[in-house]
Length: 404
Image 1 (tube, rainbow, N blue to C red):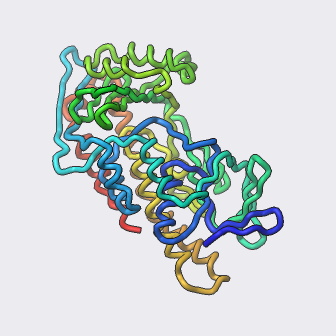
Image 2: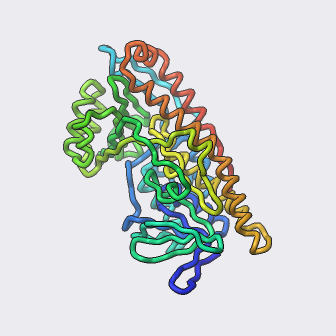
Image 3: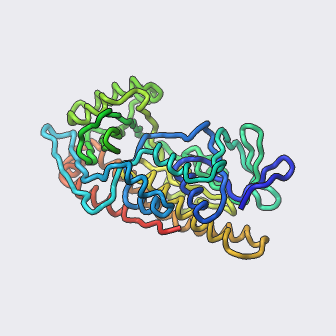
């Protein structure tokens, strides 16, 4: 599988738009099967957003399937438990549940993306390549027009280009909707070691949810989700104001949480509005059409309340590479290849539709419960939330995307 030129156009077998988690996982999965792909990334280098993410067991199954699980395990703590505290009661209610027997870590996105990229053949990722439009060629190929004037033709087009996906738009999927909440995330670097136990700590109530968890000996990832007032929305590009906002909101949380915020440099703080795809759109919209499909945030943007956004993008990559591999590697007449690709992508869409629907709706529900300020909801949350949340997280993390 390779690329060649026809006139001014470069012809590719598989083009993936976006070098994020879903895009690079799909590309590496295809590479492991002997299929070359070209990954177009609009940025000048790998884009590292949001610093880290909780990597549940379903994510490790996907990472093992593409052969990079063990190298990443060696670089990140194994988390021992989840600790949930209320920030509503005068005397905070604290509950803890063990992760014993489960493989749960907090993986740094930079290390994950760099590991994925290093495993790919040189030239797989083409940086500074922004897709501005897509049209149909007479032979079922898709024609991509790039911002620099280049034109690519491809047999297969995969959109892993995030919440503002050009490919999702071409498929007719609507723009993700704003949840009404925003998130601030950061990474605190403790040179010489932070001394925290390997636990996921969460604080809920008073209209926000926050927490922190160590990635390794020196790096601690933290987050805050809240419903911003109009003035607070304007702070998103101002790290100093964001840090002040977090400090004021977390005045009733633990000293440990406060120390993590204090230690965070302004360059290591980011904020974004939380968007999600209306879940019913996945049931009657097009995840794939012909030789085009979407994966990752282009498919299922969700709120971060069950920590499955990055994990499910890894699942997407493995399932998509497997379905596409079956289509492209199957011996048959050249004329039938388009139909095989179409059926392969349909199979992928069927496998991912209900999983994505489930994760989006569950994350939205959990976020609502954790941040709701009503007295009844606060009481129920403080009495039952940890058991409910732990069981829920465990069930969602029990998914197995299978091998390539």
